[in-house]
Image (cartoon, rainbow, N blue to C red):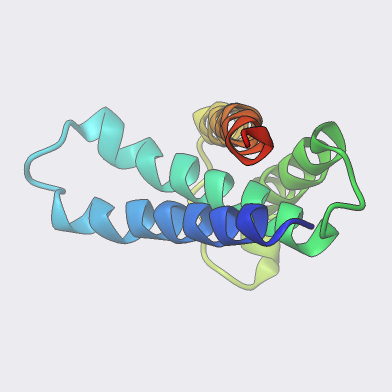
Length: 121
């Protein structure tokens, strides 16, 4: 994997984790709907880039999407893999899918921007 893409993936994981952590800081100033699903969206975003880091360029983006969705939706389905307490909400599945979709979109767009920038003389 290109070192620039690796650094970008690490940055995106940190952004996803930051979204999860900042959720509680802004609990008074954001809507209830946002508060409920921001964690799912943020974690799913981070998981996609963690999978991409682990794949180290050996898997295509669609495969990374599939693996990330399996992980986050499996977490919901198994009530936190039996390790963490998790409140069941069917809309969490949608929030997880949106988080992975957003990560995929960021991955595709930023990869193209990086490749165009690197190809310029």
